[in-house]
Length: 234
Image 1 (cartoon, one colour):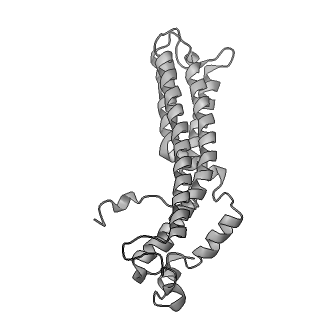
Image 2: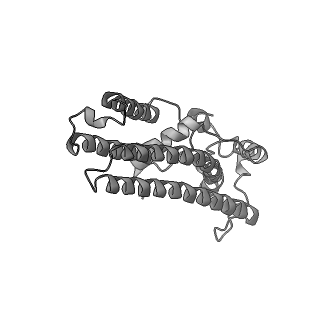
């Protein structure tokens, strides 16, 4: 349901008035069953958030180690940086799969926050989603991934991995251009593979990653903090 139709909701309607009833007591304590449900979803979301952070941590550690070793000696081969980029790609795929799972739990938490807690605190603004109960019930009965693999990859590229690819491949360009005894583009060669062919593959890979990250799309991922509203509601 779009935002315009949500604006037409009458917060004084009898069906809608009952949604927040019993949620908050005088001491502002939520009802026990809902509190336990919300606490459980928060725990699951936190667990999957930690799994994402672990993958990012190891990706940064490996990239740092590869960069340090490659530039420690002029005799170290430049293509180790490309192996490091391949490792980053593997971590990106793993993290994207974990992000799809994380989005399930975050979506449930945000559904409760927007349609239960926010409404219970201030019913005058109406419901964010009048069908939230049906949607959440169906999600508990038949949980499925809400976003595609390509969208989750795009999300993680925008957040961290495109920057890591830029650093890794930028270091590779510097390595073959300024720290090689052979002229460019011959310095990019790997064994019998010509340097120009290697450069073309690397450039195509980076352009593909940038395209996946920034191509126009309709995002299905659950909304995050709104950075453009910093300090607005203080």
